[in-house]
Length: 375
Image (cartoon, rainbow, N blue to C red; front, side):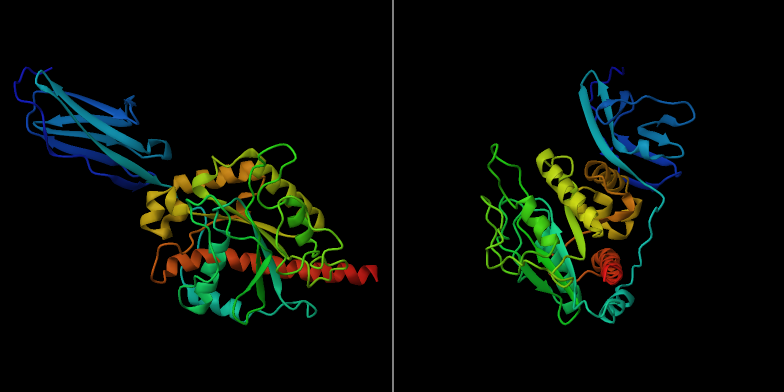
C-alpha cells in the first residue's frame, strides 16, 4: 500500500455499461493520486479474475478493468476501492449484458390495429370473442383492459377501475363485461385471487366461481361473494349456457416484479383454474405485466425487452411456477403513469392480444365442429 498522506479521491468515476453478448467491457476511472491499493469487487464479493477473461490495469492515476467477450454471467455491479494510509474511497457501476434477441416484435402498431379492426369471427354463431382475465390483486387485470381500450380508442382510457399497487385490495367486486368499441371482443374482469386466511375461510375470488364463469354459468354483473359460490337458484346463474355465454380464452395476469413473492396458495388456485380450462379445451395465455419494474434496460427502451436477461429469467420463473410454456407468456407494460400514447407499449400489448384473438376464434370454431359431430 502506498504511504501517501493524501486521502484518495475520484476525479472521475466508473460509468454504467450496457453491452451486447460477445462485446468487451471496459470500466475506467481516475483518482487524484496513484500510490494506492486498488481492489475490485463484483456484487459485493472480491472479483475472481480469470486469465484471458479479465484484465486489471493502472496507468498513473487511471484505473481500469477489461472484461473480454461478455456473457450474461458477467452482468453485475462492479466496485473499485482505493486505499492508502490516509483512508479509502469506492465507486461502483452496473454492467448490463443484452442477450441476443430471442423473440421478434412488430414495432409498427397500425398494421396490427387494422387487422384487429377488420377481424371476422369464423363461427357465425359467435357474436363476440370473450376473454376472462384472472390473477392476484394488483397484477394489472383492469389496467390491461384500460390499455387495450386506449389503443383502439386513440386516447388514454381510465374509466375501468384499477387497484393501486399499494392498496392491497381488489376494486373489482363483480363479474363485469368491458367491450372494445364496436369490435367483436369482450373482456371479463374478476376479483383478484388471494391467499386464504384460515382453513375454510376464502378470500378474494373463489376458484369455483371462476371455473363456473369459464363454463358460461355466470351472467354479467354478478357480485362475487367470498363466503359462498354462486348457486343454481341465483338469478345470475345460467343453467344451460350456449357458446356465446362461455369464455373463449383464459388470460392469466402475472406481475413480473412479484412472481417470486406470489403465495403458493394463489399459484395453486391459478393452476386449478388452468387445469379446468384445459379440460374444457379453452386456450390459455399469460400476460406478464410491470416489466419496467424489474429491468432497467426495458424501462429505458421497450424494444430491448427480448434482449433482457432479467425479463427472460422472470418469464422462465413464471413458466416454472405456473406450468405454462414460454411461448404462451407475453411480457408487457400497461399504461399507468403515462399521459401520452406510446407506440412501443402498444405494439407489445397488440402482439399478445392478437394471439389471444386467434386462439379464441379457433376455440369457437372447434367447439362448433364438436357440436355438429354430437348432433
